[in-house]
Image (cartoon, rainbow, N blue to C red):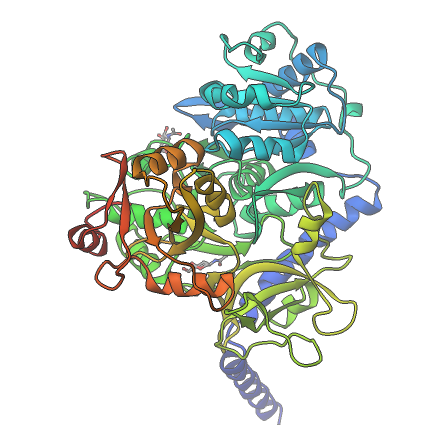
Length: 619
Ligand SMILES: *[C@@H]1O[C@H](CO)[C@@H](O)[C@H](O)[C@H]1NC(C)=O
Ligand SMILES: *[C@@H]1O[C@H](CO)[C@@H](O)[C@H](O)[C@H]1NC(C)=O
């Protein structure tokens, strides 16, 4: 009797087990991940209940007390311990306190490449309770000026190697903005912060300067392209910094990990996930000024790197490197990032060994994040019943002709079927707030969709098209709107069109991205209508774009059209142009190619076209 009961019970369990495997194959993965998230949520909630607000700076300071001698940053072979970074950032705070009238809440723009001083200045300013605005270090002239103006800073701190960029715009900066350079000798109008640092003490700054009253208070501005117009400064709260910095932990990193960061720190993934992530764990960060495919694995071996951060391009470049001996001979066990295409993903694992690739999806200013906690190649993550409890998101039908979400007769949007690409939108509410952008409310509003499924509901428009498959895995499809991605950066088409349109022989410039084999994202292309009776000058276009735009934003191709399409909308026209691409055999209009060796645009011949298609010519 008892025996049969037991076997019955056993068989039942076995049956349940198989049923679960069959119907919910990812149940345990999903649940494990959920528990992790919940555990973190509870921790945060406990802090809140105890009235303790713990920011990323507080976490850093507590590591600096508990493990002062542990390496925090390793840069060009030099080790900066937690104590070193703490002391130098205190110097930055004290120097600015002594020589300026900076106070809590003031905005300070930071224009610096990846180097330890980026972190010193960032943390130093955080110790004073200032809001730090990260500027893209590739920006020049008008684009840089636009970004500085957008965040209305009291001061700008500039890295030693970027003083040239600030010098160009110095006369146009508002008078009350003080400019500080991290170099001993600085141009006129700039104060040397480096010199001042050696003259102040490295004693801690009293916590009263930086204690926050709310995790919703603004901590950083990080520039993003949004979906339209010029770059915008997304308002990043303390809470978002905390959320961003738990990424490494959520993917299973620990304090013993050595994290290789080659991505620019002015983007949220480098700063929040990378540096913030190391602070959260108390781990070590190997910081690189600029990603180098040829030095990548040597660095990993030299510093015993265990984790690295990637974007799709980075892994593609690594795969394109010539084969070497012992490519699997390293300690890297995990990589965290986004934008990896499944073909590159497979190639990468084949060649460099069994590295856990952790794809995630999340916009800087967004209120939603996906992680591939189950590890399906190519997918950015998976949604499930649990996840839906926390984040309400939908994929809605998109009208590519009009470039806006499709609405039915009653004016409501509708969801796509599984397997179809749809625009990812996520519900904005108390639990998932959207902090918006600085400046005009119009910018913030333009990212929100109202009255989506019913009157009064509000959704954040990510501007990304995604596909959800039958197992609820999500895949990135494309970006919509007036931006495209190239070399890991977002290019705002209106900004490029503005720069070209300033030339006196251009009547109209229409900028878009075209796919090129062997590359992630889209290469910039501009179709131009010339003014009659003005001399057309390719050299001038080259000089104009290369002096005003960062390299990644310069159009690789030009197309000269003699008339505008008279039918359809402006957007319709773009769609057709993108479809046409840059094939000289198909397009009868004159086409040109940006030749960086000749430093000019040259006619796009059949030979050049073939070389590009065969991936022999680098863009
Ligand atoms: C890397 O690990 C090896 C073996 O554990 C050790 O001898 C070496 O000192 C480590 N290198 C660094 C830079 O920490
Ligand atoms: C993400 O996917 C990879 C498979 O390529 C897997 O190895 C990894 O475990 C996944 N991430 C997490 C957090 O499990």
